[in-house]
Amino acid sequence: MKFLVAFALIAVASARVFEPISVGPALVDTYEPIDTEPAYVDIPIPDGGVVTAPVKPTPVVVGPAVPSGASPLVQLIVNVNVPTGVSVGPAEIKPEPVIVVEEAEEGPIVPEPVIVAPINPTPVVPEPVIVAPISPVPVSPVIIGTPIIPTPAVTLPEELN
Image (cartoon, rainbow, N blue to C red; front, side):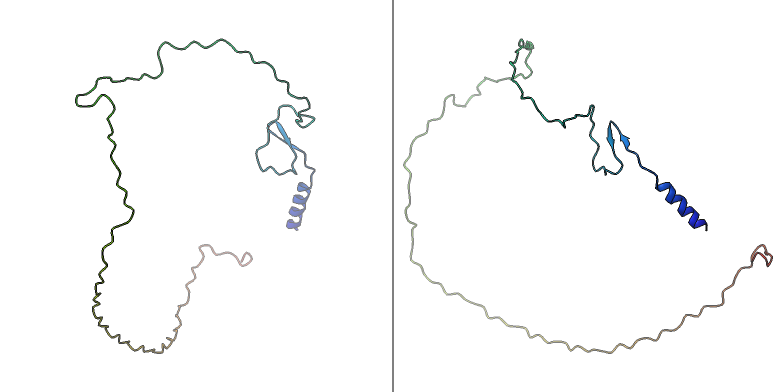
């Protein structure tokens, strides 16, 4: 009986009318699942954000130039001291004739005999496989003694047992 009363209370409590909830600035109905974060909209747009008027280009006003700082951001140090023993000008390249080999030099091919060492195979003696029957071991029952039930600390009257 208590189960039916509890079930009826849960059914009545869950049968109420749901109202839309507000999540941040966007209103979301309860039946609509929220898979992502809701969009933040300041003012609802009645036409859905459709651009109706064409964009007209306007001239750009160029402001005054920003004055540059007195010191540069990057300073390059160039060492112009020439060490001794290094040529100052570019090295002269002397042209030399290039030797082009059209064919590889082929000598006479002399066949050499290939000596194959004899292979002495070792005989493989298979060991006989003896299949011995495995007899199952009889299972012996486990002997459990009689359990010792502890006596209760307080003896209850027969009406409460």
